[in-house]
Amino acid sequence: MNGPAARVRVAVYVTRAAPDGAELLVFEHRDAPEAGTQIPAGGARTGELLTEAARREVAEETGAEVEPGTALAVRQSPHPHTGEPRVTVFFHARTSAVRDAWVHEAVSGDGDDGMAFRCHFIPLVRAADLLADDQGECLHLLEGVL
Image (cartoon, rainbow, N blue to C red; front, side, top):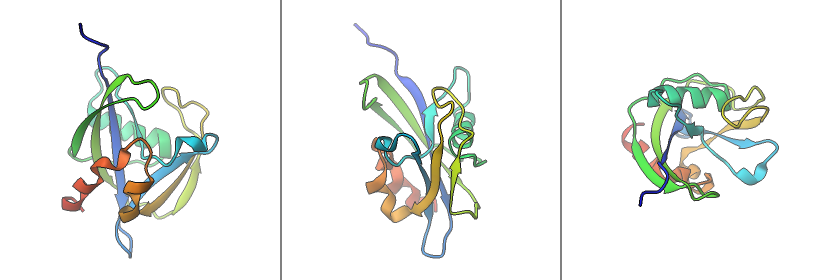
């Protein structure tokens, strides 16, 4: 007997060049710090191209506008809280953003309405150990891209 269909998601490593090496755009939920440090990620809508889902998730969660490149990796894993199956497609996008930190209060999207995210950049070399939900698992794939 088959279980429920896997939810298809996207996750986006948004990087920028910095004098001391590449930096990664991350955020924390202002009102839910227990959610940890994250990268933009979320579910793809029915019929939505995955690159469009990636662009939308970055805009919804950080306010940044990016052009995601080719997919880096696909990971299948259960949701950390519900155990429901999910498939996450990881993308990379570059930004030339100059501000180092901001609060994005215009968050909207499936389940995110009214949330505020504290967005900021961190050194890419430190990111893998800081990201929640194993989001740093595919960071090593950026080595050939940056």
